[in-house]
Length: 64
Image (cartoon, rainbow, N blue to C red; front, side, top):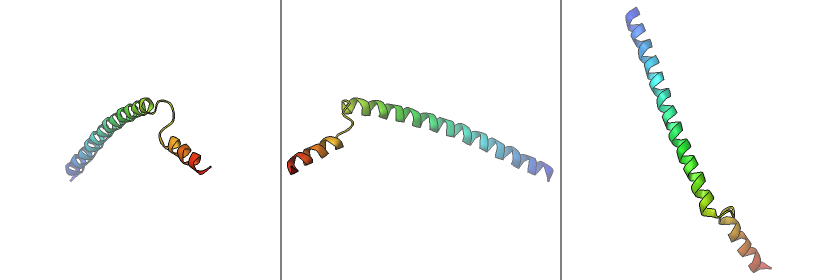
């Protein structure tokens, strides 16, 4: 009975270690995707802060 409990403990610890390493890789991939998205957004907007603000100005001119 003790050997079975020890084997189960080893399997749980091994599974936890595998999961933690996998989560580190997932976090690293998400960080790279976030950095690439941040760089692409910075280049695409041209420093104006996005297209939604420009659309708001267009509508305000037509009203008044």
